[in-house]
Length: 75
Ligand SMILES: [Zn+2]
Image 1 (cartoon, rainbow, N blue to C red):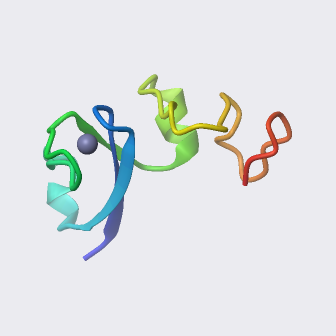
Image 2: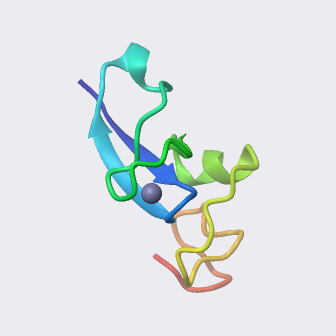
């Protein structure tokens, strides 16, 4: 089973889950706050490009989707 990464917009938590491929986009409760306001993070780049902000984790910036962010020095 592939490992997927999810992001909770309620508590800004990222977590991983092993799920069947056909369940990858099903709602999954946050491991921390059990909110269903989670979204799958296909990649940081994709997460930014589809408009679901992966922000608020501190230190990041809008161009952190690339492997080496030259804007804020993350990664
Ligand atoms: Zn949460």
